View 1 (tube, rainbow, N blue to C red):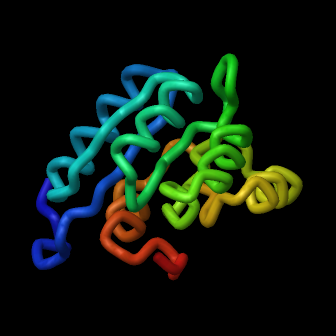
View 2 (cartoon, rainbow, N blue to C red):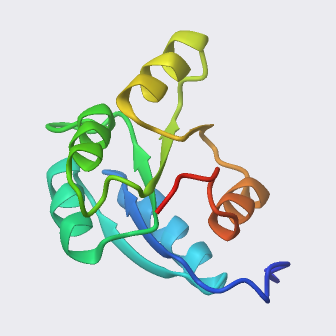
Length: 133
Protein backbone atom coordinates (compact mmCIF):
# COMPACT_ATOMS: atom_id res chain seq x y z
CA UNK A 1 0.00 0.00 0.00
CA UNK A 2 1.77 3.14 -1.18
CA UNK A 3 0.65 6.61 -0.16
CA UNK A 4 -0.03 9.14 -2.88
CA UNK A 5 0.23 11.91 -0.28
CA UNK A 6 3.89 11.57 0.65
CA UNK A 7 4.29 15.35 0.85
CA UNK A 8 1.35 15.90 3.19
CA UNK A 9 2.23 16.42 6.82
CA UNK A 10 0.62 14.00 9.24
CA UNK A 11 -2.59 14.83 11.05
CA UNK A 12 -3.67 13.97 14.57
CA UNK A 13 -6.51 11.50 14.04
CA UNK A 14 -8.76 9.83 16.60
CA UNK A 15 -10.67 6.71 15.54
CA UNK A 16 -13.67 5.67 17.67
CA UNK A 17 -15.25 2.29 16.96
CA UNK A 18 -16.49 -0.54 19.17
CA UNK A 19 -15.45 -3.14 16.57
CA UNK A 20 -11.85 -3.91 17.46
CA UNK A 21 -10.98 -5.39 14.03
CA UNK A 22 -12.22 -2.29 12.20
CA UNK A 23 -10.47 -0.04 14.71
CA UNK A 24 -7.12 -1.82 14.28
CA UNK A 25 -7.28 -1.85 10.48
CA UNK A 26 -8.15 1.85 10.26
CA UNK A 27 -5.34 2.69 12.69
CA UNK A 28 -2.79 0.71 10.63
CA UNK A 29 -3.86 2.36 7.37
CA UNK A 30 -3.75 5.89 8.78
CA UNK A 31 -0.39 5.33 10.49
CA UNK A 32 0.99 3.96 7.22
CA UNK A 33 -0.07 7.24 5.61
CA UNK A 34 2.02 9.14 8.16
CA UNK A 35 -0.65 10.28 10.61
CA UNK A 36 -0.50 10.23 14.41
CA UNK A 37 -3.41 7.99 15.39
CA UNK A 38 -5.13 7.34 18.71
CA UNK A 39 -8.01 4.88 19.09
CA UNK A 40 -10.94 4.40 21.42
CA UNK A 41 -13.38 1.48 21.57
CA UNK A 42 -16.37 3.34 23.05
CA UNK A 43 -18.00 6.73 22.84
CA UNK A 44 -17.12 7.57 26.43
CA UNK A 45 -13.48 6.62 25.91
CA UNK A 46 -13.45 8.56 22.63
CA UNK A 47 -14.60 11.81 24.22
CA UNK A 48 -12.07 11.40 27.03
CA UNK A 49 -9.21 10.69 24.58
CA UNK A 50 -10.22 13.59 22.36
CA UNK A 51 -9.95 16.04 25.25
CA UNK A 52 -6.35 15.01 25.96
CA UNK A 53 -5.15 14.15 22.42
CA UNK A 54 -6.86 17.16 20.71
CA UNK A 55 -7.27 15.58 17.25
CA UNK A 56 -7.44 17.42 13.95
CA UNK A 57 -9.83 14.80 12.64
CA UNK A 58 -12.14 12.24 14.29
CA UNK A 59 -13.53 9.14 12.56
CA UNK A 60 -16.46 7.95 14.63
CA UNK A 61 -18.71 4.91 14.28
CA UNK A 62 -22.34 5.77 14.96
CA UNK A 63 -23.77 2.52 16.30
CA UNK A 64 -21.97 1.90 19.58
CA UNK A 65 -23.42 0.70 22.87
CA UNK A 66 -23.63 3.33 25.58
CA UNK A 67 -22.71 6.70 24.10
CA UNK A 68 -23.38 6.54 20.35
CA UNK A 69 -21.60 8.54 17.67
CA UNK A 70 -24.29 11.23 17.58
CA UNK A 71 -23.74 11.98 21.27
CA UNK A 72 -19.96 11.88 20.77
CA UNK A 73 -20.23 14.55 18.06
CA UNK A 74 -22.43 16.76 20.22
CA UNK A 75 -20.00 16.50 23.14
CA UNK A 76 -16.96 17.21 20.97
CA UNK A 77 -18.65 20.24 19.42
CA UNK A 78 -19.47 21.58 22.90
CA UNK A 79 -15.85 21.47 24.11
CA UNK A 80 -13.52 24.38 23.20
CA UNK A 81 -10.55 22.02 22.70
CA UNK A 82 -12.36 19.85 20.12
CA UNK A 83 -14.95 22.26 18.70
CA UNK A 84 -13.05 22.72 15.41
CA UNK A 85 -11.96 19.13 14.79
CA UNK A 86 -13.16 17.63 11.51
CA UNK A 87 -15.77 15.00 12.45
CA UNK A 88 -16.45 12.10 10.11
CA UNK A 89 -19.37 9.74 10.78
CA UNK A 90 -18.72 6.14 9.77
CA UNK A 91 -21.88 4.05 9.49
CA UNK A 92 -23.67 1.30 7.66
CA UNK A 93 -26.62 3.61 6.97
CA UNK A 94 -26.71 5.84 3.89
CA UNK A 95 -30.27 7.16 3.79
CA UNK A 96 -30.92 10.90 3.50
CA UNK A 97 -32.40 11.01 7.01
CA UNK A 98 -29.20 9.41 8.38
CA UNK A 99 -27.09 12.06 6.63
CA UNK A 100 -29.34 14.83 7.96
CA UNK A 101 -29.03 13.42 11.49
CA UNK A 102 -25.23 13.32 11.36
CA UNK A 103 -25.05 16.83 9.92
CA UNK A 104 -27.35 18.14 12.65
CA UNK A 105 -25.15 16.50 15.31
CA UNK A 106 -22.10 18.35 13.98
CA UNK A 107 -20.41 15.87 11.65
CA UNK A 108 -18.63 17.35 8.62
CA UNK A 109 -18.75 14.15 6.54
CA UNK A 110 -20.85 10.97 6.42
CA UNK A 111 -19.07 7.82 5.16
CA UNK A 112 -20.80 4.51 4.57
CA UNK A 113 -19.13 1.24 5.53
CA UNK A 114 -17.09 -0.28 4.13
CA UNK A 115 -15.10 2.92 3.74
CA UNK A 116 -13.05 3.07 0.55
CA UNK A 117 -9.31 3.39 1.22
CA UNK A 118 -8.99 6.23 -1.32
CA UNK A 119 -11.74 8.26 0.36
CA UNK A 120 -10.16 7.81 3.79
CA UNK A 121 -6.76 8.79 2.41
CA UNK A 122 -8.16 11.91 0.69
CA UNK A 123 -10.06 13.13 3.76
CA UNK A 124 -7.12 12.52 6.10
CA UNK A 125 -4.77 14.41 3.76
CA UNK A 126 -7.10 17.35 3.14
CA UNK A 127 -8.25 20.00 5.52
CA UNK A 128 -11.35 17.83 5.89
CA UNK A 129 -13.75 20.32 4.41
CA UNK A 130 -12.48 23.61 5.61
CA UNK A 131 -13.57 23.77 9.25
CA UNK A 132 -11.74 26.81 10.68
CA UNK A 133 -9.17 26.35 13.46
